[in-house]
Image 1 (cartoon, rainbow, N blue to C red):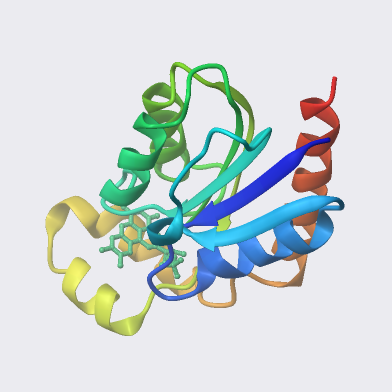
Image 2 (tube, protein in one colour; image 1 turned 90 degrees about the vertical axis):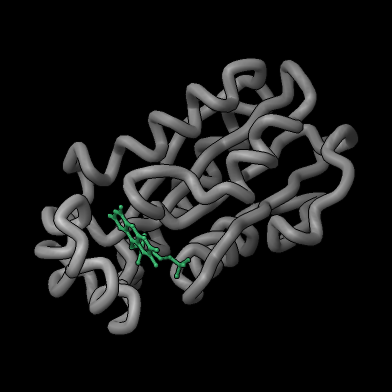
Length: 165
Ligand SMILES: Cc1cc2nc3c(=O)[nH]c(=O)nc-3n(C[C@H](O)[C@H](O)[C@H](O)COP(=O)(O)O)c2cc1C
């Protein structure tokens, strides 16, 4: 009998929305928890892990979690970001997460855009290394939207199917 964990880190709620859509679309024995509440990982057969892209990379709390997943476990990764979906800027953090989780089986990844809080935007747009994605920020303001949530649900189902093959 499979046991699924959906865990996430979310500062302003975008990644949490995606995590909830994933969790809602799954059937069976499932749990959703913010990353701070995750203790043991051993008895889950599939773990969904979500995070917002921070400074082109993976937030520290998620990086730490990825490093302590037992070897051979099946996981699926999802992220939200301000940069345009499909751009290199939106992909590099997921690529980093996949490399960090090298001892586990990454079944797939999903990402979508998420609105950037005005406070974050104000601070980040002042630093040159964040300019490129910060310029893309205005068009992220309506995300995650209904289409993103639907895509996240389809991703979750695909991952479930893969996990039992
Ligand atoms: C400190 C900080 C750094 C960020 N860095 C990036 C970045 O490098 N690239 C990007 O596309 N979005 C970046 N963002 C935007 C967030 O990834 C995006 O708004 C995300 O959806 C926030 O998710 P949350 O509401 O779950 O925290 C950053 C946001 C913050 C607050």
